[in-house]
Image 1: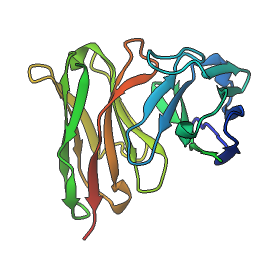
Image 2 (image 1 turned 30 degrees about the horizontal axis):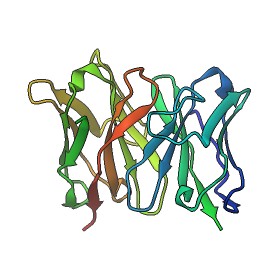
Image 3 (image 1 turned 180 degrees about the vertical axis):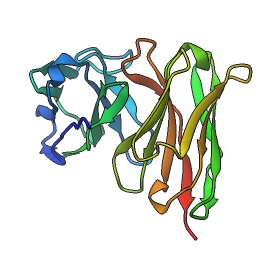
Length: 106
Length: 118
């Protein structure tokens, strides 16, 4: 079955750029999406179709996808961006999530 | 307002069954891909099942043959029938709607907790 791999954790200082990767076989040939989940809350879509932001998502969130790696970039990271982030793609009519990356802003 | 609300969770013994409901408002469940995603305590998101607009259904290997996704267009409700429940099915179950482009899920419910334990 298809797998998406993310680093378990990432720490950044406020104002710095956070880069979260998601790796999968030929992932660049699929659309990648990203979700943010804060403790006790439901996931929120922050990036779809590799690099598009839903309405209401700040411009500091951006995405890219090429080769085997999709990347979520948060520029000027703020304390309120501290959360778990999950990548997602489709493979053979199945939805696949990455294992998640816990972003700590300190 | 476009939203989904899950109900039906609870405590159930191993081997038992439960049906989750996801009531949709502001849109028709048959006009979007609808999915169930679960999250075990302290763990990541795990996809469970999806139903396409044309009615085709797909399942994760871990629930294949035990869970059934369906929808009632007249009531605008999505369901997840869960049979032969196991301890490892314990999780918060989320219902979600796609964006309309069948790629990402932009509308999520608050989730309903299912605990399988004796």
